[in-house]
Picture 1 (cartoon, one colour):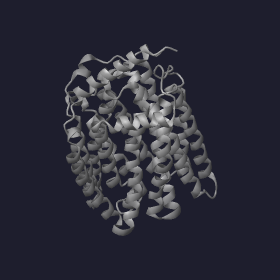
Picture 2: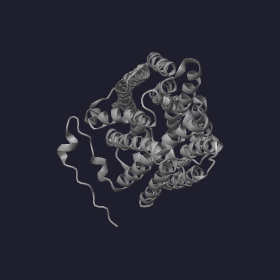
Picture 3: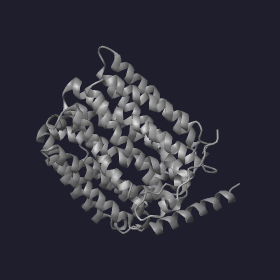
Picture 4: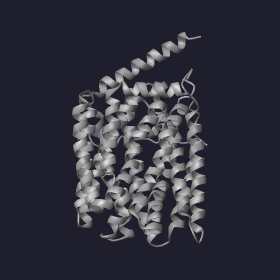
Length: 437
């Protein structure tokens, strides 16, 4: 069945602030966008449900935070494996296979929730296995994007991908909180399972995305080559380290169920998860200005510091409206940081290394939150939930400026130079492949 291209008025993509929808004219990108959007929406149901279920079963903030540590260990290994695979095999097949594996895990969670005595250990196992699968899927998903959309559209692509996440993060947690307060866990897991089935249908229609010609075979050496390349690029190191710092110190999601108790209970819990996405959405729908910003490193530093400030406000808040305002500020700031980090990655990394570098990128933006959850839960035992959140935000701001001072090339990075470098490296790679028998 032929999909009719979406027509976007020229004026809407040339405005100063308007969201650029032009990448949606590309059929395969549109299918990937739909698949990712629907599964992201469902995944946020489970993202809320698993910590809530552990909290109900144990009442211990540390055991809730321990979910992050369970996810970190397999992710550290599988991110490198997934990156190497994404540079060697069809990336579309890799995304489809891992999405099918997620579907199986959701079935297990649903069955476990329907039993009279759900097993706590299964929640930790599913969290760990999910992280391992994510380690394989995310590099393929990230590295497929530059093959589906041109380099000069990466800011627009980043905004659209963030938009789908924001829709998921606003709508799904709110609905999940209401379902947890009423219908129960089983409905939450069932909805997520349904979204994965729809996603699989969309992914099956995307054309093959074969690896680069004469791609490097997955091996320890190919992984090391990717690490060496990342280490040689200060602008890449800056994106990794600043985000890890911000999320390690100021990712209080594990404490949401406990902070919600003093401001309204389970129904408020969904609002906490949704509020950062509201801030992100406000930035996204006015993101037309981002295409004219070239000092990407400078923008990332300021946004990461503002994330820490928003989290500190959330921790101080004694009223629901102020707590939500702090999370909205944090979410908008994180959106700006993530958008420009994505532009740096997609505009500067040559295609034959894109999968391996995507694996490293995933470690940077996922290990921080995972370790941050464990840090938040552990320090809450000593300082209380409020103290853990407030001091985490303060330390995130301090660490951001310290890293910026230590990485002056990142602070001064200009995206125009990065795009020219990528084009030169891709041309050199093509010439080398052509000359090799």
